Amino acid sequence: MRKKKSLESALHEVEGVKSPSSVSDNSIKHIKLKRSEQPSETVFVEKILAGDISHLSRAITLIESTNPKHQAKANAIIEQCLPFANKSVRIGITGVPGVGKSTFIEAFGKYFTQKGNKVAVLAIDPSSSINKGSILGDKTRMEELVKDPNAYIRPSPSGESLGGVAQKTRETIILCEAAGFNTIFIETVGVGQSEIAVHSMVDFFLLLKLAGAGDELQGIKRGIIEMADAIVINKADQDNIKRANLAKAEFSRALHLYPLKESNWQPQVTTCSAFYNEGIDEVHKIIVDYFSLTKANGYFEKRRNEQNKYWLLETINQQLKNNFYNKPAVKEALKKYMDDIQKLKTTPFKAAEELLKLAQNK
Ligand code: GDP
Image (tube, rainbow, N blue to C red; front, side, top):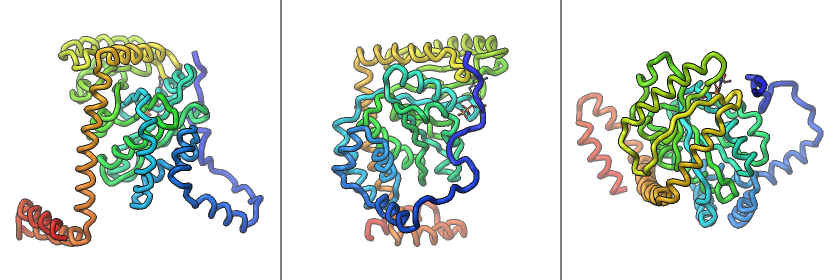
């Protein structure tokens, strides 16, 4: 049994006394200038392909930027990295806040890196688009994984819409794969549509659950159970083991009621204790079985193709929307029509028609 680690993070941004500067102001200016200089696309691509994390991070920052110049550069980098991407397994991990996602990802990530894999952990946080806050929280709880040279953790991009955030994550996957990460975890929370977004970019979807008091099948969104390739009951430790096993039996029964998935995969249920690092090997085994089945029966490739088509259409939708809402004339008229609708001067449908017409002419 692993020793209970401190629940308080010992990482990042620890408040304390400011350390005295050991360099002159002039050299700070010089360093800042150097840092703000952007390497060329070719340098970015070369460095990313060589597994250079600092360039990978900077390229992801370009993806996340709203500056059109940065976006253009990011697109060029992504395009050149694309032939080197796609060689990974992409695993989505979801569950309500507090279920143990960070703890699980840390334990699971370590399990993969110890087997010689390179793990990238990305996140899609719907709250970053709703209230600019963060439900997923920071990654400071993945203390060990953060220090692991074979792991890379990147928090959720923020954005105006979930669609935008999801697209950025999808592009980030390509860069991480090109940088040699062969295992990609994408974390999200059971809120809104974010699970659907994650499901649309992963090969395997894992739902983390807690054992409840016999009401496991209530209060969970049916759609999410249907999406899950595995349900893992976490916190199966100490006096919770019995309840976790009961929950496991209940979920297994429930899952058998669903028709077999197109992948021909029967979703599995297992228990684990992420905190005490128990049962992690069983989760790994499930995933290995899933990939050997779906790679042999062609579903793996079929699904990735479908996802690519989906993302083509999704990107067009996103771009059309951005073009529309970013037009100054539309922005101005939208305000007026919002007001008109409130005063019942026009209908939403008529207003939409007028706005779309206006956008076409501008
Ligand atoms: P998240 O919000 O889903 O990322 O959940 P966290 O990973 O932050 O975990 C929430 C709390 O549950 C923390 O206090 C963890 O230490 C605790 N926790 C996580 N996994 C386990 C587990 O397997 N067993 C027990 N007993 N506690 C756990």
